[in-house]
Image (cartoon, rainbow, N blue to C red):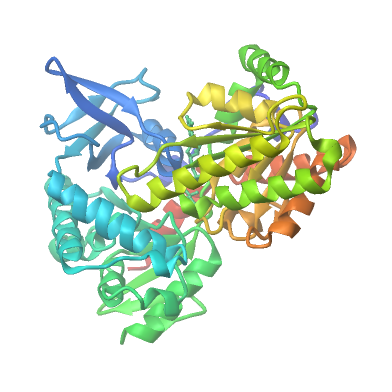
Length: 494
Ligand code: GDG
């Protein structure tokens, strides 16, 4: 092992100093739509289940490390106690508190499934034709944002850092600012922030900007989204702004805008990947598929992730390169998501039909061409899949960042494996070493996947080393430190 970062990657050497302790606030008050653990009552006892999805993967290690309070919806309609202590041992290093926010079915329908997931989600991912906005959804979105703000205000103590997350809660920062003029408030958006032409499709675009500008720091994954936000402020509000410094003047306050590419706990994934049990499981997976080459997709089942287009490209590749038939398997792991939204049900059917078609055309010789798995896996098993796969296909039509790409790189402690990434994933700019595709160009994508299949061992190693170097350096703690440093600077400049 040549250097310290290699030692860390393999889980050896000194443990990393995770954070500059001086940056840590009194406490973290984190607010997001969902708590990191789904909570429900069974025989009067609170039962926990860790949630899937990028936000949880990113933030759980952080609050586990620092302690604090996480406020969010439980995912059930059970009336839960006001606070639940998440004890060490349930995956967390330090105790932290969960403050469940009980939502009614009507609220979930209009605020969560409705305005958030039928309105903002498609629009901010540039699917403007799919975006549905109506008054009832909007009024419920406002009311639930108010509910979150009230819960945060009730919990707030001087010295806390309030950190509000994601598109469900974009009105909360301004609501907090009104009640807590001196509080330090950060906001981070986990999805893209679209160009102003797209944003304007939302009948409440100005209110969203006003809501976000209640924060001291508004963070996005990449510069493009931060620039889009500045353009929107310039075009749709009267606030003065300094584009070069990415500052907006709101009354006496300066709001800082910045980009902070979110990441993963690299060491955690590398450690799991290096465990003998994981290697054994990966070998089992390889033995199960007799194909010479295994490609892998891991996504929440979402139309933004480009799963249909990926399947089309694979079909075309198998057609154009018949020598791969029987020698290539594509495993698609799709964790169920937003199953009550019609667009998701429709897409699920479309995918199943296409898998059937590809199997009909190219099955029979050797292993199945596509193995579609519509369920979630424990993280250890997911990492075994990462280790077993010769290539990972991360081909979203639009994605804020995409953590799967980073997890794949972190898990390849053997420095093998090739990553194919869409240029519409936020992660694309950072992940030099990946093979880049445009998922709207099916023929081009088919050729690029073929190119990834054919890479020789040495070229793969070179590319994987580059990827691992970036992700090990720019890990989740690096992300957190950058965000905290920026928030701290807002405070000290005040
Ligand atoms: C949003 C933004 C942004 C998936 N299947 C299983 C499983 N997962 C985990 C993955 C990964 C996470 O879910 C998915 O994260 P992504 O980043 O890929 O995507 P979103 O859920 O859409 O996340 C995204 C992210 O927020 C963070 O800001 O990157 O752009 O859309 O961690 O590993 N985990 C387990 N089993 C599964 O079957 N255990």
